[in-house]
Image (tube, rainbow, N blue to C red; front, top):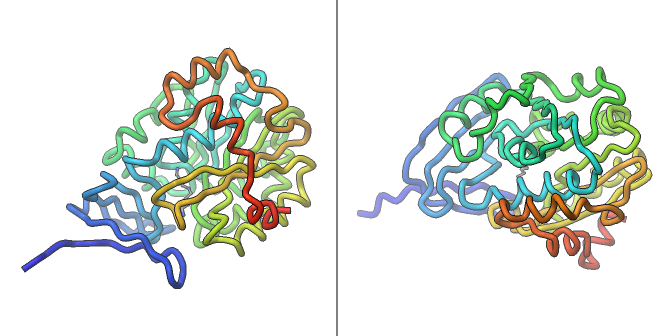
Length: 280
Ligand code: SPD
């Protein structure tokens, strides 16, 4: 008898991704959501929130490098960084590669996500105890409203626009994000799959285009996210992508990355026609 255990994340009415599960390492319902960390046959340890896949040991580097290095290398001296969401710690790990970074505020609503990832996903969460990291276990929506003109780079490393992440997809939230940026600051938000989250993309870009004068989409493949194709939005009051890149630092950073490099940075903003139509 075959007792294989599989988990299927239903990513859309007719789309799912199934992973063969070796063990359940952690499974708990927090005040905010169901948190599961599974040891899977192909992708290693995987974090699910409310049944939706957030990160896997095997392909997390693509997402975390792309959300971090594109904006940080587009800023002349990123010192103060805010990450909203991102309790798994992967984005913190990437941001700490920058010598100019003095402080990284990680504003994560669910302290149990942080604790579970520290225990079970050390290759992702391993830098969360760095002295430069200021962990704020609170709602990003209220945190951002209290911090004007404070950050060089803000990264919205959110879950999908459901459950605890919902408040991170509103005009009020992004208006506060804009006000929390310094004049030459840059915000990058994860903006879902151009193939299977078209309704969400239209919602996100509708809001961002109202709030920011510069709104630019970039894309990369993420094998474990819906439809395997992902997008981020680069927004600012002044900076446009590719106008400035710290090339000296880029040469050092790309020695430590597995996905990101100079060519990827330049080409990530080249959009297929159907994505251009979605975000315009
Ligand atoms: N559908 C998956 C969307 C997940 C985006 N955030 C992932 C967090 C990884 N740090």
